[in-house]
View 1 (tube, rainbow, N blue to C red):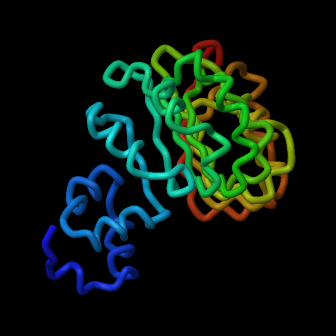
View 2: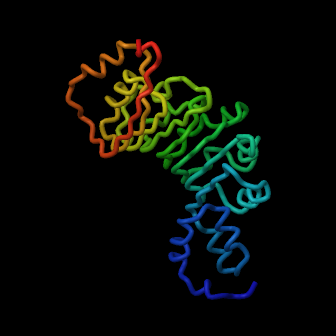
View 3: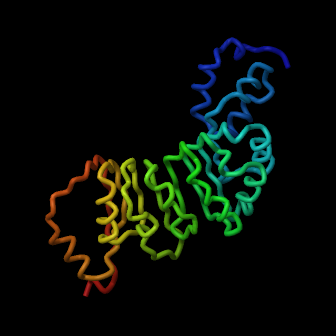
Length: 240
């Protein structure tokens, strides 16, 4: 490998560039350009891995080229285009090796992989999680350390997404997104998340009793919300 102008850039500048790209884009663009660049790649420890839609050979390249402690953000998907991906990822790394992981997104994770994620409470830096509404992965053990929780709705899902959030003190939670949540459950969550800044929620009214509770509730709010996006899904029995 010959030298090039990139070799004149200090490591810090290259790191700043890498922050704007997914890991697969970084490796496609910079791997084997020069020996100096390769050394920078192998020492960089803030990789963002998006495996939601990725070719198998790119997936293998990344998993074989980096160490688990270099992963800062991870998106895993077992959906139609990437069936069995979580099991394959776990054949390279164990969850408790991801000691610098800050953000985790899990999409349609296969049941055979569920038990592996029971160790997420061992990840000291994890402060953001995104899961499906039908996920069997519990966040109870890490909820108190999370700054960001997103629960995405699956097709034909009419469950109360708020039930995935444990009724415990959530002092660090700043961003919460629930696509389906009853008012009573949301009110309960907010009591434990007094530092919440951003809320994205679709309220479900399962009964006229809940509707009346919302209308007649005049309790002063202790919340620090800066951003609120709320929609209301009124069930048929409430329209009568």
